[in-house]
Amino acid sequence: MQYLVLVGAVVSFSFGSFYIYSTLKGRVQPNKVTWLLWAIAPLIATLAAISNGVTWSVIPVFMSGFMPLLIFIASFLNKDAYWDISRFDLIVGAVSILALVIWQLTKNPVLAIWFSILADGLAAVPTAYKAWKFPETETPIFFMGGIFSASTTFFAVTDWNFISIAFPIYLISLDITMILIINRKRLMTLLGA
Image 1 (tube, rainbow, N blue to C red):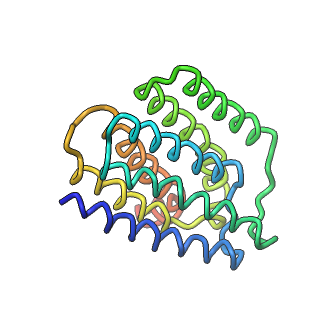
Image 2 (cartoon, rainbow, N blue to C red):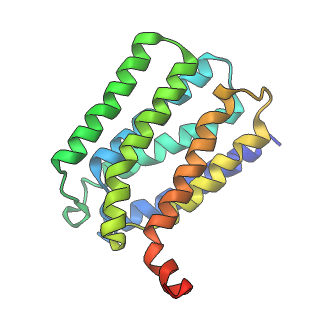
C-alpha cells in the first residue's frame, strides 16, 4: 500500500504540469508570493518529518512543495501570467516567513509542522482572495490533484501521529477550500442562488 504514494506523486506531477502549462499559456495568473511560500513550507515540513523518521508517507508533502516551486518558476516565463503583488501579499508573506523562522529557532519537529501549516495557510490568503475576486485567474486542476496526492499518505503511514498526518490533513482541507473558492460562481449558478 505504501507504493500508492508514488501513484499520488505521479498524479500530483500530472495535475501540476497542467497548471504549469496554463501558466505558460497565460490562462492562469499565479500569485508569486503564495506559490513561493507554498513551495517553502511543505519542503520544510518534509525535512522535519524525515528528521523524525517518517519515510514513504512524506512523499505527498514533498510533492506539495515541489510542484509549487515549479509553478513559481513558470510564473516568470510568461508576462501574461503575472499577477500584481500588493502590500497585503507582502505582509502575509512576511508573517508566513516569520512562522518558518520561529520553527527554525525551536528545532522541534512538532512545532515545525505547526508552523509550516501556519505559514502555508497564510501564504494561501493572497491566492484565495484573488480567486474569490477573479476566479478566472485560477484553475482547480492543481488542487484536485493535491487532494488525491495528500490522501495517499494515509495508505503509507505506519506510525499514526501528528507529525505523520497533520500536514496531509491540512493539505486536503486547503485544496477543497481552494476548489470551492475557484468554482463558487459556478456552484452558486448550479444551486440557483
